[in-house]
Amino acid sequence: MVVNHGDFGPWNVIHQQGRVIGVLDWDLARFGDPLDDLAQLALAAVPLKPSTADRLGASPEPAAISERFNRLCLAYGAVDARTVLRHTVEYLDRMAAEIEQLGSAGVVPFAKFKANGVPGQYRAEALFITLTFPAL
Image 1 (tube, rainbow, N blue to C red):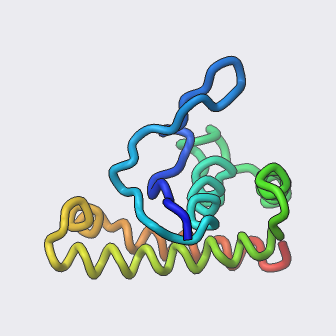
Image 2 (cartoon, helix red, strand yellow):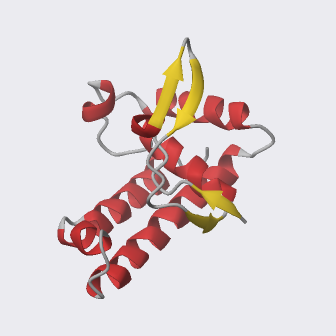
């Protein structure tokens, strides 16, 4: 286990001259699997989502997404892309269940996430990954 960021995406990374110099917003940090943060980064930066219009301004072909995903896994080092992809689906399912549980108990900010339909979004993303990249 390591300390995971909990909201690891480009919006929480500070860059200077093409290098990462800091990571912000650690309020959702927790102990967990190192692949959890890699899964979050893949979802946000590749992105492994059904709609990429809000991130890339278009919906690239699955082959282009697969190439970006493979490059991310290579840059991370010594990690199999298929393992990360499976972990990402499991991560989304686990987070959807956790948000429902904590949201139902009124825990902030999970109650808001639940009310905003985040568990359903996560499950839709997991299904998209499973159907779009079965052989990655």
